[in-house]
Length: 321
Image (cartoon, rainbow, N blue to C red; front, side, top):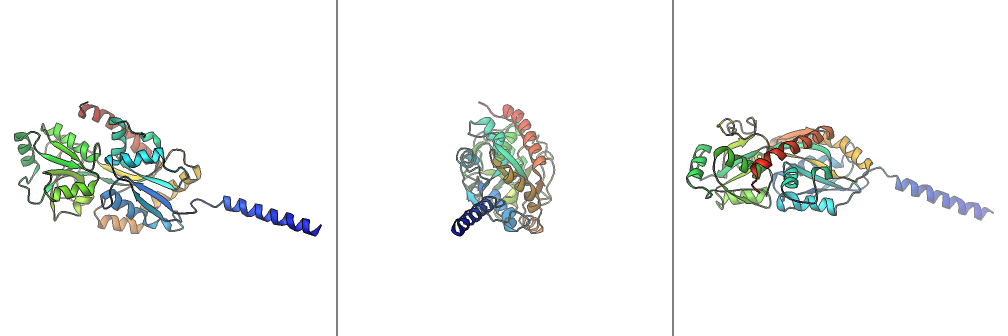
């Protein structure tokens, strides 16, 4: 009888332990963050900064590990996330706007903006027009005049097709009445290297990267509605008389693929904005010239909706099928 009672107690304790193990709070192991661009570019660089405090108990309590999946202006990674990525809450996705929405409008990827659950936004990085340091084109006026005199001969690059850099290029062509030859690269790092080495005549790239590389290039203008505090002497295109707004500004943040557990979503939307506002993150972002714009999940969802409405109209006008 005693043996039977002891056996039952062992089974009961084992059952209780199993329940406790199953109820471990999320997250109980490191989280992967899929970054759709090459190491060293602005998205990768900033993702590493904003994710640094993740292991602290007041945030996720587990480290966030960056996984780079570059290609096709972000589509390679976002297709993978929707088709094969885990939905257990341990695969966060770094989004880029307007890239993610523009590509789903123009191309036929596996995803749309509705495939993802916005968690929080960490930054807003305007596109800037850059030329090699020794370029004879010293300002936008000279750039446009040369392009008009040499239609299609001006090569300009960016971090892929229908990313913010490509959209800014399309806007510039329309606003200035010029024809450029756009070259999509694998990511911002590759695009910068092509500009440095004079493989292309110009590029649109991220303000954050340009800010860190002014020894190697000249920044002619910003594709935004106002000047930026990091580059106060660089004019906007609108100041120079070109109708180019902020449609190409690169918003960056965290999202999940739809289907993730509510526990994971609730945890992430609670701690991510606070983590992005961590004093250490704010300091490092500012020191590196990386524009910080923190938005919670509600604000981020509104941005998704606004960008989608804007881009549907813009791309219908700019993209010639």
